[in-house]
Length: 438
Image 1 (cartoon, rainbow, N blue to C red):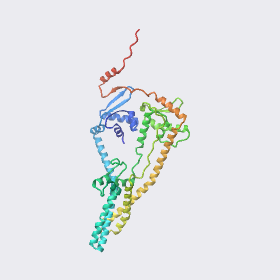
Image 2 (image 1 turned 30 degrees about the vertical axis):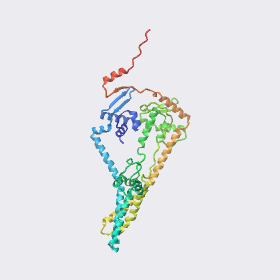
Image 3 (image 1 turned 180 degrees about the horizontal axis):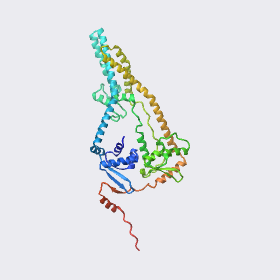
Image 4 (image 1 turned 60 degrees about the horizontal axis):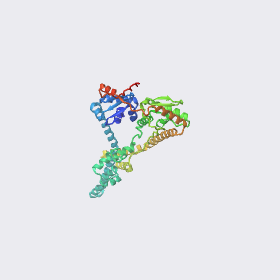
């Protein structure tokens, strides 16, 4: 996600007045990226800038910010249309694997039945062959129903057949579009079984930085490194407290650079990390942050019925396609090509999921190891170490200078006349007390 997209997602559609620190805490972006992005947005949509008495810069955005940007920029409109087209193309690609499986299975079964009927009718008469053809012609339709919806889905809907509306919803559904966010249609389930459901931790880094920024604001912008260690990627937690402190302090460098922080030396010579741009009224919260946990890869979101239908379809292709190839007459080369394609496609559908299992297990072991390390750092930071308590107390004292400070008064607003603001500022300034006369 780009910087602009992250800012638009955080600002929303109802308008907002915000500071750079608030946006950085909400999006996880660096302070420099946030400030440049907000300045560009304010200039483009004719927003307002406000300055408080303490020098804090506030950005005021109008409602329907995204629609205003689309109306002002043809490049953004083209980009939005391109993104919609790419999403549609990706959706069609995901559905195509299941669609090919359904079509190939149905064609193989139907053509095989026709060839069997032809062989039988050539020996036992046309009436028997016609009756057998009428009976076997129902088999592909039944297989198609089972592949698309499954027996339990039909029973759940209370219907003995699949309507067009049910078929469309079962084939086309995506996460978040149905009652169950984990439910997928059979066509989407085929892609899920083949390739999985993507990286469950794809948005881990933005989440990490948002939690770090929120933790910094919650502690008034002044923390010790051990309290942030459960959110960082550190080596195994050593048993020596001094070694833990050194490793945690060294890992704070990316956080200091991202959020414009600076280390300061406490009264006892310990490092305390200060972030003036993320300072807020201290809430009296003490202790480390909960550890960042990565989610393990799972094999597929496909349900039991969908996996069973997948196995039946692949097994049917592996068994019936060689038979179809063997009995296909020489004057029907397209049928032979279909049989060879079905064999190759079934092998692909069988090999790919089996090949994913070792890779998935290796990834999950690495994820579990990282989660264990972060949990160990969190437990070490939660211990009753007197040195940790002393350092936290020094951080609280250093951050208490901003606590309880009243909200600064606005001294400038780009949306108002400068003379009017000057008059209002003079009226709001308290008069000095008159000198005492004897």
